[in-house]
Each structure stands twice: as C-alpha cells, then as structure tokens.
Image 1: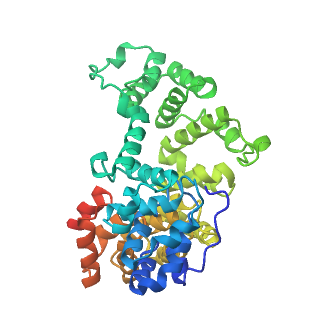
Image 2: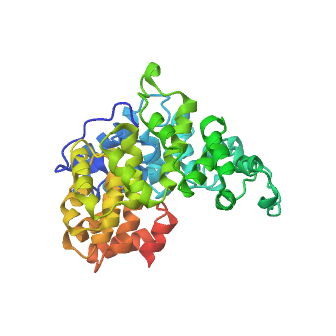
Image 3: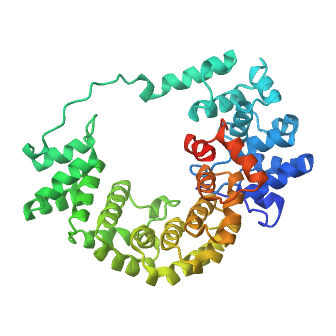
Length: 427
C-alpha cells in the first residue's frame, strides 16, 4: 500500500475519473484532447494509486498521452533528476510501444538522463513489451543488464525427474518435497497426506504447523488438516488472528515467523469444508482485524443468501472510505448474483478510490449482466485501466454499439493488453 495515497478528486469530475482509472475518464479525456492535458499530467506526476503492486495505470495513461497529444516537455521538466520507479517512466514505456514518435526519440537520444532511460527500459523489460533488438543501443544495453540479473534467465534447465512414489516415503519426506528445487505438484502431496489421514499423521501435521520454521512445509500441513476437516488448529488460529499487528510500528508488528504461521493458518481455514468454514466466517467477520480478513475469504467460497445483507452492509461502509479491503466480500456478492445487490455493486464500480475494488465490482456485475445498469458499467469497462475489468467487459458486453465495437477491434490487436484480453476482444 502507498504510505500516503493522495486525496482523489470527486468521481463526478474528469480528474477524479482519470485518477481512478475508469473507462469514463478515458473517453472524456480522449474527447477533450488538449483540454485534458492538465488532468492527465496531474495523474502521471502524482501517482493516484493506493497499492502500486496491484493497480495498473501504464497502459491507460500511455494510451491517453498518445491520444490527446500530451507534450513531453512539461512532463519531463517536472520529473526530479535521477528519480527511479516513477509512474511517468511506465507511462512513457507504454507510449513507446504504441509508436509515439517523441517518446521514441527520447529513448534514442544520447543526452537522455540515465535514470529516465533506465526507468523506461525497466518497464519494457518487466512487462516484456520489447526485446533488445527493438531498442536503441543504450536502452538495449540496459535491457540486457536486467535480463542477466534475473535469476530465472540464468538458471540451467533441469531434466524433469520421474514421478516420486509418495506412498513409500515417510510423512516428513512428503512434506519436504514441497520445498525442493523441483517441487512435486502440490495436489499430489495433499492427496497423499489426506489419504493417510490417521490420528498419528494428523498429530504430526499439527506439530509442523505449530513449530516448523519452514513456510512450504507449514503451509502444506495446514492445508492438509483443513481438507481433512480437522479442527485441532482452530485454537492456534484464534490466538494468532487475535494478536496485535500494526505493521507501520515496529514495536507493535507481529514477528515475521508468526506472520508466516498466521498466513498458513488462514490457508487452513480456507481449506476447511463449508459446514465448518461458514459458521467461522459469520463469527469472525464482525471481530475485524485479521479475523475479518480471513472471514472475507471464507465468505467468498461459502456465503449463502442469508449472508447477503451483512456482506452488503460491510461493503457499503468500506466503500465510502475508498473501497480497500472489500474484494472478497465483493466476490461473494458476485457469486450470489442477487439483483438486490446491483445498486451497491454499481456504486463501488463507479466511485471506489481503490481500483482493485472497482475491478472486483465489475467482475461481480458479470453475474447480473442481463440488467441494463450492469451493462452500462461493463460497456464502460472496455476502456478501464485494469486488464481484469476489460476482460470481463469483453466477455459480457451484449450488443455493443459502434464505439464499443471500435474499442473491441482495438483491443483485439492491442500491443499492451494481456493476451487473454486480446483473445476475448477478438471473439
């Protein structure tokens, strides 16, 4: 999460729409052309995202930079010298891929700042939007340095080993396979542990979850006990879920070892059968903290119509504060697909400051795609900043109008969208 996310403009303004990455903002800026330059520049220079690890903006703003003819001079003049990992670099990388002549000249110029060149190239490398032969010499050299630093590119390919006869191994040997250099498929390991399932096995798995220091072993043991419907880990889960954990304050932060174990216990709860998991979700959700986080995951899998009102109340209260922390509840409402949830899902899709929440709301609306209000949101999502939202729109927009058909044709050959998005648009 961004330490200090900026205050966003209202969702009724062009700036607010652009900050949120909404399709309506894209269309409004494209139509306004030069009049939208100040709004677009503000978004690129002051990153509006709450969580930069999951919210996407490079394609969205890069397309608009090209479509509106945004001059590079004010953008480059506002960038601090030597700055790294800024949104502007990613946006310029997207514009480069789209063939934007000024950006192409910038990357090829001998006098381009090293940090700026490195930032643009890093995005082209990480997104695999370019190959070194397509780049000018300095950028190609930077691309190759990044590739050499990547451990996976230098790792020798190993010959696949024959399947391990799991039934002949000890319990600890099966657990150890979860962390080897060539891990056995996890479903095979879980199947073997559950097939044993006797009391001695369960007791040993519980000891591993409580005391083993190795994450992969702990996670595998926790998942197996969850699938077995074994309740003996619930006291430990209650203990760790209830511990104080203020990550921003070192003195109040849960130690890393306990954080790891807590994550594995969340996996345990999510693997419990519905008959056990749903009562836990209902009991834990109102307790907040990590109880609430895990309860949301359980509701996503097991919520029933009886839970809809409580889920809507939770989403409505959190949506007013930006929409963070509601994605599992949105997915639960999407699975229930009750038309009564339509106004709330539309509100989240249109107003949430958190674009992760918006794309989950858009996905939830696919279950209500026959309704006109859902269709309006899905059509808008064809121009959304998030590929997941665009993919949902491509699959569920019915009877697209001329503008939507034109956008689908663009997406089908778009060099910056995910391959699945392009395939759905083509279909």
